[in-house]
Image 1 (cartoon, rainbow, N blue to C red):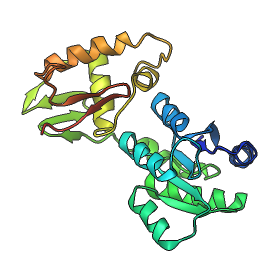
Image 2 (cartoon, rainbow, N blue to C red; image 1 turned 180 degrees about the horizontal axis):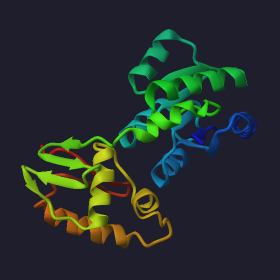
Image 3 (cartoon, one colour; image 1 turned 90 degrees about the horizontal axis):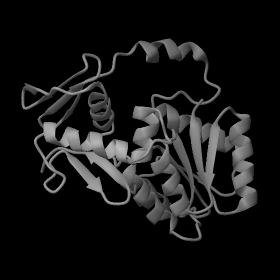
Image 4 (spheres, rainbow, N blue to C red; image 1 turned 135 degrees about the vertical axis):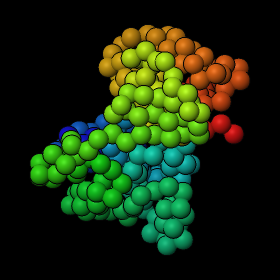
Amino acid sequence: MPSVLVVEDDPSIRQSLIEVLAEHGYAVRSAADGFGGLRELTQAPVDAVVLDLGLPDLDGGDALRMIRGISSVPVLVATARDDETEIIKLLNAGADDYLVKPFSGGQLIARLAAVLRRTSHVPPAGAGAAAAPAAASAAPQPATVGELVVDPGARTAFLAGRELRLTRREFDLLAFLARHAGQVVSKRRLLTEVWREPYVDDQTVDVHLSSLRRKLGERAAAPRYLRTVRGVGIKLVAPR
């Protein structure tokens, strides 16, 4: 079931969007302001975001840029601004599509389905199961970040041609970060998706990251691949 985060400050509109999405098979989370939406994104991933631009705490354009700073999740912007220049600016800032208010539930579902088809391996809600076998049979592809090559299928990781000796959990952690290279991933998300234990203490992640840093030949004070974004999370990047 694909999941959608709705960021909308108007309670009645937010509830209407939630009901329409739920009726069409989406799992829905919501936030009433920009920072709330950002918190939701760092706590657990979603397959798409419906973002209102008229938020009480952040300009929608700023919220969009902040989302793009931590995630590549598809974003469908809902706006009352129908000026072409403004819409082009939003698309250039990272929006995947837009809806001009007022819009119908049918428009929302159609646009969202189109965005998911274009940008994600996740099929839109209501899509037939015929596509599932092909997705399931696709082997995970190796990820290359600088001189680091991580192959989830073979469960091997090489740095500058040298194989890294990793524990099972260290490999899972590195593979997840490599799959989301360049994105800031919160510790809570790592616990949810790598450990699958969202209520374990964050220190568990810190211990494994520290061990992983040593095996990558770096320290927290002098990072190369693993860069901490204070108060947000960690990201895997190619050394500068």
